[in-house]
Length: 261
Image (cartoon, rainbow, N blue to C red; front, side):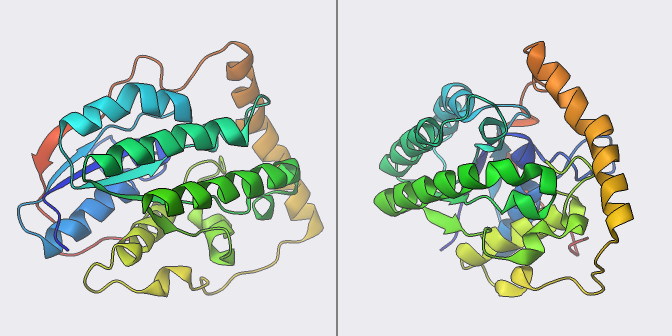
C-alpha cells in the first residue's frame, strides 16, 4: 500500500530527540520512516506534530485534531513514556488516551501504527520498579490496538532494544542508531519494500560491564539526568513548554540518495 500523507504525533521520541539532524535540529525515527516511505511512494507529504515532554493526554488534546485536519492516510502514535515515569502513573488512564486516538484516527480512514514499550529494567537496575508499569501498559496497548486494527511494533521481547548503544545517555531517548532501528521496525510492520526483521538482531561486540563500571554509570546517570528530571517535575516544568511542532504542515519529502545510520 502506498501512502500520500503521513502524520506523526507523540512526544520526544517522535520529535527525534537524541538523533541530531546536522543542522541544529532533530531527525528521529519518524523522519527516517518518512524517507523510507517516500522512497517507495514518490510524492509523499509528511507532517510531524510531536513535542517533547508531552503526556498521552496532552498529545490527544493538542495534536489529534490538528492531525485529523491534515486528512492523513498514515499516522504513527507514540506516547506514554512521560506518563510511565511519573509517580501518578495510571496504565488505565494512558491506555484510555491512546484508545481514543486510535478510535478517531481509524474512524477517519487513516492507517495507524504504534508500539509497545521495552523492558526498561534492562537499561538500569534502578528502573526495576517500573517493570510492572510497562507490563500493564503494554497489555492495554495490545488490547486497544487489536480493537481498532492498529499495527503494532513489539519492542518488549527483543533484547537488542535495550542495548545501551541504542539509547542516549539519559536512557529516555533513543540514540541515532536506536531511531534507525525504530524506523526499520515501523517499516517492517507497514510491509514497506526492502523491510525485514533485521532490526531485531543483536548488535555485535556486546560486552558485559564489570560491577565497578556499572555502579559508576548509575551514579553518573543519577546526578546528570535523574536528579535534574526530578527537580523539573517538582517545579512542574516540562521540557516542551512553549515549544511548537517542528513540522506542523504537510511538506513533500525528498528521500536521501542513501540512508545514513
